[in-house]
Length: 150
Image (cartoon, rainbow, N blue to C red; front, side):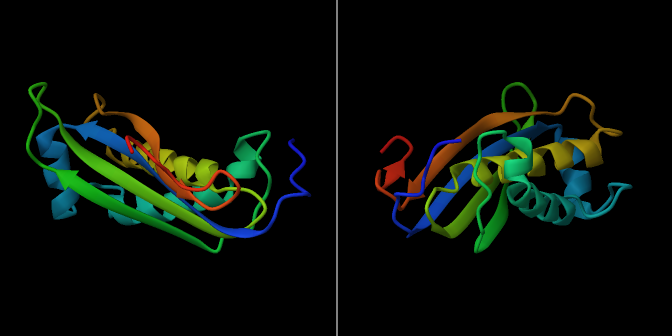
């Protein structure tokens, strides 16, 4: 692990995303609460928060940090792409005041939420996929502000 003991404690915020690609019928079942395992987005939201909290257990060189906030939100895109897939974009924001950033926690939260959506819906749509996992923005620390494409 990198030695962060000389760093200053600052407020740090990171936002990441992941997208789940699924059939229109699957999205409709999620929206209508017709998935047998339960409320897909509510469970994925909780799973994302749990994923953020477990990041140092999953990523070997991550420092354990005290998260002060984790927020998971979803944006549904019901219009199918030319490939016939709809999408759900997961936006995960993690926050702390500390010596190191929360980028990995935000990205892990988005990824775990996406995996949870797959797990809950795989019985009706095994062709689901997810991707476009990326850091959208981060602030705080010595390197300051980062915004994707900005």
